[in-house]
Amino acid sequence: MLSHADRQISGKSKSGVLLMSKILIVLTSHDQLGNTGRKTGFWLEEFAAPYYVFKDAGAQITVASPKGGQPPIDPKSDEPENQTPAMTRFKSDKAAQAVLADTVKLATVNAADFDTVFYPGGHGPMWDLAEDRKSISLIEDFYNSGKPVAAVCHAPGVLRHVQYQGQPLVKGKRVTGFTNSEEEAVHLTSVVPFLVEDELKRLGGTYEKVADWQSFAITDGRLVTGQNPASSTAAAQALLKLL
Image (spheres, rainbow, N blue to C red):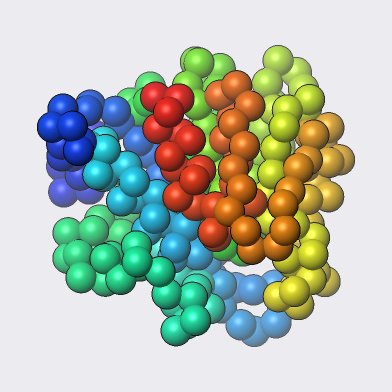
Protein backbone atom coordinates (compact mmCIF):
# COMPACT_ATOMS: atom_id res chain seq x y z
CA MET A 1 0.00 0.00 0.00
CA LEU A 2 2.58 2.55 1.06
CA SER A 3 4.83 1.57 -1.84
CA HIS A 4 2.78 3.95 -3.98
CA ALA A 5 5.49 6.58 -3.64
CA ASP A 6 3.95 8.71 -6.33
CA ARG A 7 0.85 9.06 -4.18
CA GLN A 8 2.73 10.20 -1.10
CA ILE A 9 4.39 13.47 -0.31
CA SER A 10 7.07 13.95 2.30
CA GLY A 11 9.26 16.86 3.27
CA LYS A 12 10.75 18.85 6.08
CA SER A 13 8.90 20.90 8.63
CA LYS A 14 9.72 24.57 9.06
CA SER A 15 12.05 23.58 11.89
CA GLY A 16 13.99 21.41 9.44
CA VAL A 17 12.96 18.19 11.18
CA LEU A 18 11.70 15.42 8.96
CA LEU A 19 8.42 14.17 10.35
CA MET A 20 7.36 10.63 9.55
CA SER A 21 3.65 10.94 10.25
CA LYS A 22 1.64 9.06 7.66
CA ILE A 23 -1.69 10.72 6.99
CA LEU A 24 -4.58 9.28 5.00
CA ILE A 25 -6.98 11.71 3.33
CA VAL A 26 -10.29 10.18 2.22
CA LEU A 27 -12.33 11.89 -0.51
CA THR A 28 -15.77 11.19 -1.92
CA SER A 29 -16.38 9.57 -5.30
CA HIS A 30 -20.02 10.78 -5.46
CA ASP A 31 -20.80 13.50 -7.98
CA GLN A 32 -24.62 13.72 -8.13
CA LEU A 33 -26.36 16.37 -6.02
CA GLY A 34 -29.43 14.37 -5.09
CA ASN A 35 -32.08 14.55 -7.81
CA THR A 36 -31.28 18.12 -8.82
CA GLY A 37 -29.35 17.12 -11.94
CA ARG A 38 -26.44 19.22 -10.66
CA LYS A 39 -22.93 18.03 -9.86
CA THR A 40 -21.31 17.80 -6.44
CA GLY A 41 -18.19 16.15 -5.02
CA PHE A 42 -15.59 17.29 -2.52
CA TRP A 43 -14.99 20.95 -1.67
CA LEU A 44 -11.61 21.90 -3.12
CA GLU A 45 -10.52 24.19 -0.26
CA GLU A 46 -11.23 21.40 2.23
CA PHE A 47 -8.71 19.21 0.46
CA ALA A 48 -6.14 21.82 -0.56
CA ALA A 49 -5.77 23.63 2.76
CA PRO A 50 -5.26 20.49 4.91
CA TYR A 51 -3.04 18.96 2.22
CA TYR A 52 -0.58 21.83 2.51
CA VAL A 53 -0.81 21.99 6.31
CA PHE A 54 0.27 18.34 6.34
CA LYS A 55 2.79 18.64 3.51
CA ASP A 56 4.50 21.67 5.04
CA ALA A 57 4.78 19.77 8.33
CA GLY A 58 6.69 17.01 6.53
CA ALA A 59 4.02 14.34 6.69
CA GLN A 60 3.58 11.55 4.16
CA ILE A 61 0.19 11.86 2.51
CA THR A 62 -1.88 9.18 0.81
CA VAL A 63 -5.21 10.12 -0.79
CA ALA A 64 -7.95 7.53 -1.21
CA SER A 65 -11.53 7.45 -2.50
CA PRO A 66 -14.12 4.69 -2.91
CA LYS A 67 -13.64 4.41 -6.69
CA GLY A 68 -9.99 5.46 -6.84
CA GLY A 69 -8.60 7.69 -9.57
CA GLN A 70 -9.69 11.32 -9.91
CA PRO A 71 -12.45 12.15 -7.40
CA PRO A 72 -15.06 14.74 -8.39
CA ILE A 73 -14.47 18.36 -7.38
CA ASP A 74 -17.67 20.21 -6.53
CA PRO A 75 -17.84 22.83 -9.31
CA LYS A 76 -19.27 25.38 -6.87
CA SER A 77 -16.11 25.15 -4.79
CA ASP A 78 -13.98 26.35 -7.70
CA GLU A 79 -16.03 29.43 -8.56
CA PRO A 80 -14.20 32.79 -8.47
CA GLU A 81 -15.68 33.93 -5.16
CA ASN A 82 -14.53 30.74 -3.44
CA GLN A 83 -10.83 30.92 -4.35
CA THR A 84 -8.31 30.68 -1.50
CA PRO A 85 -4.49 30.82 -1.28
CA ALA A 86 -4.34 27.04 -0.83
CA MET A 87 -6.39 26.51 -3.99
CA THR A 88 -4.15 28.90 -5.92
CA ARG A 89 -1.11 26.98 -4.71
CA PHE A 90 -2.70 23.67 -5.68
CA LYS A 91 -3.41 24.86 -9.21
CA SER A 92 0.29 25.53 -9.79
CA ASP A 93 1.42 22.33 -8.07
CA LYS A 94 1.71 19.58 -10.67
CA ALA A 95 2.81 17.00 -8.09
CA ALA A 96 -0.26 17.61 -5.93
CA GLN A 97 -2.52 17.48 -8.97
CA ALA A 98 -1.00 14.12 -9.91
CA VAL A 99 -1.72 12.78 -6.41
CA LEU A 100 -5.35 13.88 -6.67
CA ALA A 101 -5.72 12.42 -10.16
CA ASP A 102 -4.60 8.98 -9.00
CA THR A 103 -6.18 8.34 -5.60
CA VAL A 104 -5.97 4.79 -4.31
CA LYS A 105 -9.10 2.70 -3.89
CA LEU A 106 -10.45 2.93 -0.37
CA ALA A 107 -10.92 -0.84 -0.24
CA THR A 108 -7.14 -1.32 -0.42
CA VAL A 109 -6.14 0.82 2.57
CA ASN A 110 -5.63 -0.27 6.17
CA ALA A 111 -5.58 1.86 9.31
CA ALA A 112 -2.46 0.03 10.47
CA ASP A 113 -0.46 1.72 7.70
CA PHE A 114 -1.24 5.27 8.87
CA ASP A 115 -1.08 7.48 11.94
CA THR A 116 -4.35 9.30 11.32
CA VAL A 117 -7.15 9.95 8.82
CA PHE A 118 -8.68 13.23 7.59
CA TYR A 119 -12.02 13.54 5.79
CA PRO A 120 -12.64 16.71 3.71
CA GLY A 121 -16.23 17.65 3.10
CA GLY A 122 -18.35 18.86 0.26
CA HIS A 123 -21.81 17.36 -0.18
CA GLY A 124 -20.56 14.18 -1.86
CA PRO A 125 -19.55 12.29 1.32
CA MET A 126 -23.12 12.45 2.62
CA TRP A 127 -24.18 10.01 -0.11
CA ASP A 128 -21.26 7.60 -0.39
CA LEU A 129 -18.80 7.76 2.53
CA ALA A 130 -21.50 8.14 5.19
CA GLU A 131 -22.90 4.74 4.16
CA ASP A 132 -19.69 3.04 2.95
CA ARG A 133 -18.96 -0.06 5.07
CA LYS A 134 -15.23 0.15 4.36
CA SER A 135 -15.10 3.79 5.43
CA ILE A 136 -17.07 3.07 8.59
CA SER A 137 -14.86 0.15 9.59
CA LEU A 138 -11.72 2.10 8.70
CA ILE A 139 -12.64 4.95 11.05
CA GLU A 140 -13.44 2.42 13.77
CA ASP A 141 -10.05 0.77 13.21
CA PHE A 142 -8.24 4.10 13.55
CA TYR A 143 -10.10 5.08 16.70
CA ASN A 144 -9.95 1.66 18.35
CA SER A 145 -6.18 1.60 17.86
CA GLY A 146 -5.73 4.93 19.62
CA LYS A 147 -5.28 7.06 16.51
CA PRO A 148 -6.98 10.41 15.92
CA VAL A 149 -9.72 11.00 13.35
CA ALA A 150 -10.64 14.35 11.75
CA ALA A 151 -13.49 15.54 9.53
CA VAL A 152 -14.53 18.99 8.32
CA CYS A 153 -17.75 20.64 7.12
CA HIS A 154 -20.12 17.94 5.75
CA ALA A 155 -17.61 15.18 6.46
CA PRO A 156 -18.55 14.79 10.15
CA GLY A 157 -21.61 13.17 8.59
CA VAL A 158 -19.42 10.18 7.70
CA LEU A 159 -19.38 9.39 11.43
CA ARG A 160 -23.13 8.69 11.58
CA HIS A 161 -22.75 4.87 11.63
CA VAL A 162 -19.34 4.74 13.33
CA GLN A 163 -19.36 2.97 16.70
CA TYR A 164 -16.95 3.02 19.62
CA GLN A 165 -17.43 0.61 22.53
CA GLY A 166 -20.97 -0.13 21.40
CA GLN A 167 -22.08 3.50 21.17
CA PRO A 168 -22.01 6.14 18.43
CA LEU A 169 -18.48 7.53 18.25
CA VAL A 170 -19.71 11.11 18.66
CA LYS A 171 -21.92 10.36 21.67
CA GLY A 172 -20.96 12.59 24.58
CA LYS A 173 -18.26 14.35 22.57
CA ARG A 174 -18.01 18.01 21.65
CA VAL A 175 -18.43 18.16 17.89
CA THR A 176 -19.19 20.57 15.08
CA GLY A 177 -20.02 20.38 11.39
CA PHE A 178 -21.96 22.20 8.67
CA THR A 179 -24.79 24.05 10.37
CA ASN A 180 -28.47 23.89 9.50
CA SER A 181 -28.39 27.61 8.73
CA GLU A 182 -25.40 27.20 6.42
CA GLU A 183 -27.25 24.42 4.58
CA GLU A 184 -30.29 26.67 4.33
CA ALA A 185 -28.11 29.47 2.96
CA VAL A 186 -27.00 27.26 0.04
CA HIS A 187 -30.62 26.13 -0.53
CA LEU A 188 -29.93 22.42 -0.11
CA THR A 189 -31.81 21.64 3.10
CA SER A 190 -34.39 19.57 1.21
CA VAL A 191 -31.81 17.97 -1.11
CA VAL A 192 -29.28 16.41 1.26
CA PRO A 193 -30.01 12.94 2.72
CA PHE A 194 -29.63 14.32 6.25
CA LEU A 195 -28.56 17.51 8.01
CA VAL A 196 -25.14 17.27 9.63
CA GLU A 197 -26.06 19.39 12.65
CA ASP A 198 -29.24 17.43 13.34
CA GLU A 199 -27.52 14.08 12.86
CA LEU A 200 -24.67 14.85 15.25
CA LYS A 201 -27.22 15.92 17.85
CA ARG A 202 -29.36 12.81 17.27
CA LEU A 203 -26.32 10.62 17.87
CA GLY A 204 -25.73 12.23 21.25
CA GLY A 205 -22.94 14.59 20.29
CA THR A 206 -22.59 17.90 22.12
CA TYR A 207 -22.93 20.03 19.02
CA GLU A 208 -21.33 23.48 18.98
CA LYS A 209 -21.10 26.17 16.31
CA VAL A 210 -20.11 29.77 15.69
CA ALA A 211 -21.51 32.29 13.21
CA ASP A 212 -22.07 30.95 9.70
CA TRP A 213 -18.96 30.70 7.51
CA GLN A 214 -16.54 31.51 10.34
CA SER A 215 -13.59 29.24 11.18
CA PHE A 216 -14.30 26.84 14.05
CA ALA A 217 -12.71 23.51 14.93
CA ILE A 218 -13.13 21.35 18.02
CA THR A 219 -10.81 18.73 19.46
CA ASP A 220 -12.36 16.29 21.91
CA GLY A 221 -9.93 13.55 22.82
CA ARG A 222 -8.87 11.96 19.54
CA LEU A 223 -11.71 13.41 17.47
CA VAL A 224 -11.32 16.65 15.50
CA THR A 225 -14.26 18.27 13.69
CA GLY A 226 -14.51 21.53 11.72
CA GLN A 227 -17.66 23.50 10.97
CA ASN A 228 -17.30 24.64 7.35
CA PRO A 229 -14.82 25.28 4.52
CA ALA A 230 -13.25 28.17 6.44
CA SER A 231 -12.43 25.70 9.22
CA SER A 232 -10.29 23.42 7.05
CA THR A 233 -6.92 24.87 8.06
CA ALA A 234 -7.82 25.01 11.74
CA ALA A 235 -9.02 21.40 11.73
CA ALA A 236 -5.85 20.21 9.99
CA GLN A 237 -3.66 22.14 12.43
CA ALA A 238 -5.62 20.66 15.36
CA LEU A 239 -5.03 17.17 13.98
CA LEU A 240 -1.29 17.80 13.71
CA LYS A 241 -1.22 18.81 17.37
CA LEU A 242 -2.63 15.40 18.28
CA LEU A 243 0.15 13.75 16.30
